[in-house]
Amino acid sequence: MVEASGAALHADVAVVGAGPAGIAAAVHAAERGARVVLLDSAPRPGGQIWRHRSPGELPPEAAAWLDRLRRSDVTWLPGSTVVDALADRTLTAERDGRPLTVHWNALVIATGATERFIPFPGWTLPNVFGVGGLQALLKAGVDVRGKRVVIGGSGPLLLPVAAALARAGARIVIVAEQAPAHRVYRFAAGLWRDPGRLLQAGRYRAGFMRAAYRCGIWVARVDSAGSALWVTLTDGRRVWTEPSDLVAVGYGLVPSVALPRLIGCNVIDGRVLVDQSQRTSVPGIYCAGEPTGIAGADAALAEGRVAGLAAAGAEPDGRGPRGAARRFERRLDRAFRLRQELHDLPDPDTIVCRCEDVRLAQIDAGWSARQTKLYTRAGMGPCQGRVCQPALEYLRGMAPDAVRTPVFPASVATLAACGRIPQGDS
Image 1 (cartoon, rainbow, N blue to C red):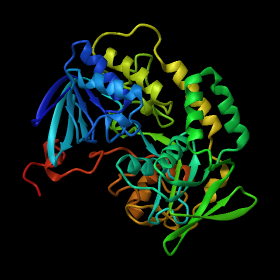
Image 2 (image 1 turned 180 degrees about the vertical axis):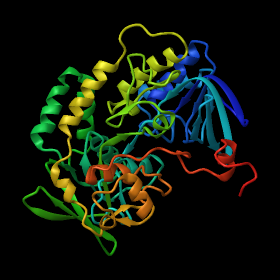
Image 3 (image 1 turned 90 degrees about the horizontal axis):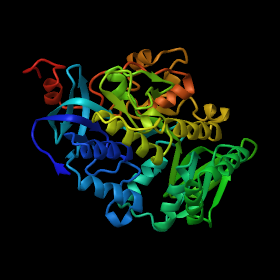
Image 4 (image 1 turned 30 degrees about the horizontal axis):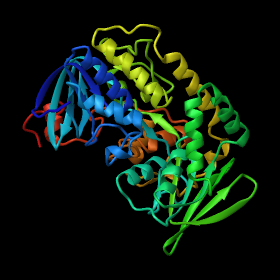
């Protein structure tokens, strides 16, 4: 792996995203002799799931893949945020505040997923995080020793985050899963088909065994009193509060599909449509991992392998990983389907767009996403709707608006470089 410099690069295969899917795609394409350029906004490869401070903190599989990437001929562009994709097979990215262009013959999109938030009173208070957000802070070195932590929301991510926090010295007060117990237990029982996942889940639960893991419970609100947070929990019948220092609440993951939507790839039910070779509806463009559906790291690695080989012109044997991955995704969706009561979490004064400080009462239930942007600026802040849009889609049934350049906020110089504003304008 070579870290590149320069304002323009040419690639047989460009890969956007350096999580498991992107790493697998880049490595397999490079090993077939393709010139591969790998871009990611993070300073190190691994994505959110393999984010780390030192190699010793990684699971063996992750360490092996990262070592394989290091030994490859992949050209690595850390700190590169893709902001535009042009019709002439050119990506425009911003790196260190400067524009960068990558010309490609084939493109693999492996942009991962974002955390889904459902606003509730108090979710914008200091020391209230998303589950993935607190996990990222922990991996970055935040000290949680002795801190009381309430974890709530839904999905398998609650388990590894609770285990990691407990291992780092935090005191887990409760892990509150909103899905009812019978659905969660049925999902767990079905893991006998996948003993690796079952063993992993057992290890995670053992990591915070002293704390309660309760199903059918959700965080209704958080209040601040002095240096403490008071977390109101409910099961729909009774309501109680727990004191805490940190709160983490997240309701699963949402595929990151802004870039493929910008390019014109078919997206159905929030997922990029691909065939058995991970080809999208746009010639020369492939997609792998979470943008095609949330199915975990194993599926992402398998899909990345297929996409990388296909993008390099070496069609993989067999039917590919789509069937097994999608079956697991459907089981996840059934087990952790969000309950109806969560629609009532925000009150009229609850902020739903943090970037622009827009409250729920300011948004008419009949508005489209475009109307909401025009009237309130919700979705037009630095996150470009990544936080509020999935929340409003859930709360209001609001379909996503069209994706426009830049996909991420960018400097004027970068926008000029991709031709979106005339050169010399200010």
